[in-house]
Structure formats: C-alpha cells, structure tokens
Image 1 (cartoon, rainbow, N blue to C red):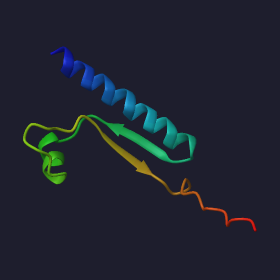
Image 2 (cartoon, rainbow, N blue to C red; image 1 turned 180 degrees about the vertical axis):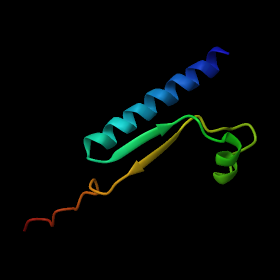
Image 3 (cartoon, one colour; image 1 turned 60 degrees about the vertical axis):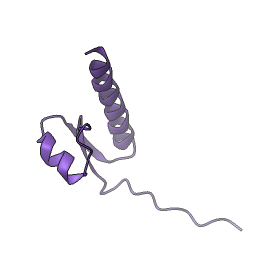
Length: 72
C-alpha cells in the first residue's frame, strides 16, 4: 500500500513539474486524472501489470521555439 501511494505522489509531482515547465514556455498544459484507465493502457499497449496514473494535454501554439541560425 505504501509503495502504491509513493507512486501516486511521484506521478503527481512529475506531472505538476512538467505542467509548470510547459506554462513557463507559453504552452497550455492540463492534467487529467479522471480518464478511462483501460482505454489508455490499450492505446499505449501497456503490459497487464502496468497502468497509467495521469494524463496530460499540452497545447503548444506559441511555445515551439525556433532555433536561431549559428553565428559565423
């Protein structure tokens, strides 16, 4: 039980860090924890003993950085 709680906490912390990084670059990022686990596991072809913990949507209309050409 404790290990499962730690996994949930780690997933939440990692998801929030990714969301904040996306927001800092101008993206719209939203975390969703209310999704169909079976559907997502099938979509990603996860093993039977694996399962998704959260889902994140990142929309990047303005956050795609254009690389600057190297200066000579």
